[in-house]
Picture 1 (cartoon, protein in one colour):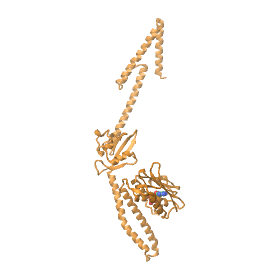
Picture 2 (picture 1 turned 120 degrees about the horizontal axis):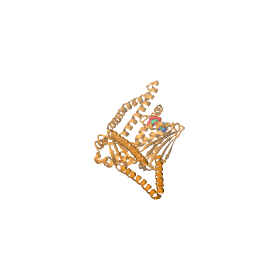
Picture 3 (picture 1 turned 90 degrees about the horizontal axis):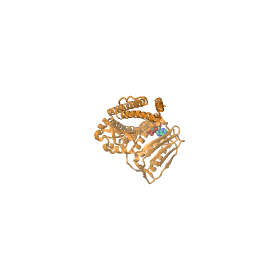
Picture 4 (picture 1 turned 180 degrees about the vertical axis):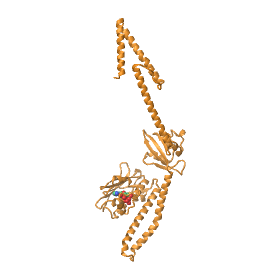
Length: 432
Ligand code: ADP
């Protein structure tokens, strides 16, 4: 029990005992007990009234002086009030500092509620998107940034990757939009001007494409002469081996150049393609024949096909992606191992191509990097097969252009599973 309450009980007991004693002496015990109780009640009502006045009117001021238990009540309430006030001031200072720093950021920041309505924006968002807080706060962002890709981006609710589109104010500028959901259904929209990055990326692509294109012709000439020399009986025996090595290396160079050209062609049209119906069972049968003819890996490739299901897409690109996966499986699996192809539909309707092998596998830490250009876990092994290190980068781009993704599951010494997952709407019926 609180000490002050204990003292109050002592006080009231003493008061009532005295009133009773006096009552007995005067021969009116009940009357004096009643007077004592009424006085006690009046005392408390008086301080209760002061408390209500203080709470209602001037809580900021020092609380009124009061004796006993009321002094204690006033003191505790006042302490609590001061604690809350300083906490509120701290939070307000923090929010002000956060808003000031976000306002000063070069990137646009827009706070959106669960209905995509604007709650707050910083100066950069106003400039980048041409928004005006006075009239646009409370508007839905989709009514102000009307680019169809942006509308599709927020409708799809897939925010792992940012969206890059032309600025709504100036076609020459490129903006990157990234939505981050937070709190209770709220979203933070970050807008960055990526014009410079976009131009650099374009320059890089053009440079690679031009350089590869320029290298193609001289290399064809060199290869032609090498072939002619190899067939020439006048060339002495000691030149046979170096000539053979030169021819193989020039073939490798040609392979790299062709892959670079294909990659830059895939990168230029980065938007998703519609394509036509491709007979995947027939295409897989062809790729299987080509892989068996490589003369590497196991003697057989198992084929598990869901008949009658094809894919809407670009046949040449799909051939390139699937064959890269199968050729890799053959190269990285010993003759005694197993390689298999599966074409199937998942429960959610997505259509998948899985290439499975029991080959050397890849350690978990390398998996995220496999689709980078020129990335190889074991460069010498890749080179020995004439690999360019661009195969999986090509696969990734082809899949991106088809709205698909690559799932990689692999364990060193056990084998790998590369699965291409296509959205359900790409599945089409085909004859085979
Ligand atoms: P490369 O021409 O080197 O094969 P890729 O881009 O096709 O280039 O593959 C990148 C790297 O991924 C390879 O160098 C290899 O280390 C690894 N890799 C790809 N497929 C497999 C597989 N089926 N089994 C084991 N490792 C693989």
